[in-house]
Length: 242
Image (cartoon, rainbow, N blue to C red; front, side):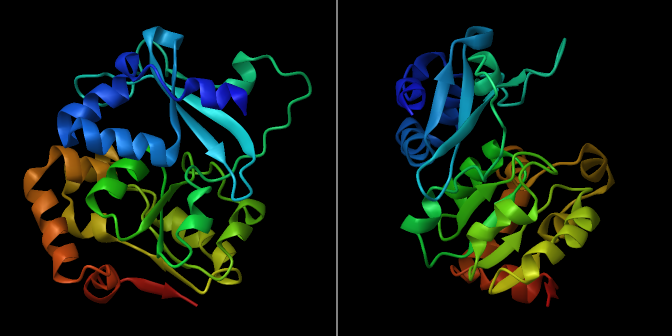
């Protein structure tokens, strides 16, 4: 869509772009934003737009989210800074049907293991630190986690990495995938490397990469010992959902 193309610029006012540039470098950030087609909105003096583009190249919508350029955390005060492009454009009779964030990459990387997380920001960060996998986001605990949206994963090997505290819920939901995917695994990599406080905060894998150097090293070592990420499955006692 023309609106999407137009938004893929003005990264100087995009707080998430600023934060990631300071954290993983500008060229890495630029590459990720291009790959995932992340845009910029003027709303809230600059915010990120996570476009949902399906595997046929159709744009479903974009989610606009405000971030703090210094911490990389979402703006939640005095209200959650999140809204939808279709709402902002006041599109009449618009019917929201969400797809994965990053779904347009499925065709390009047809042989990569698919890793699914909740948040779009997490998918971007994990794609930088663990480029062997193809990282998609559901856009929230429920987001596009429904049997219709999941059909695009037909025949793929899929690993779900729920945020801390959401593991049980995602295990239940993973049954949706067992008939579609070649293999489905629910990872408890975070449960294995977290403490009580981190669990209560509901952290995600990006938090470990970005804010916890020691945890990041543990994850890195796990991954480096086996670049194919098979290790996540072998050593972390993952449950294979038949």
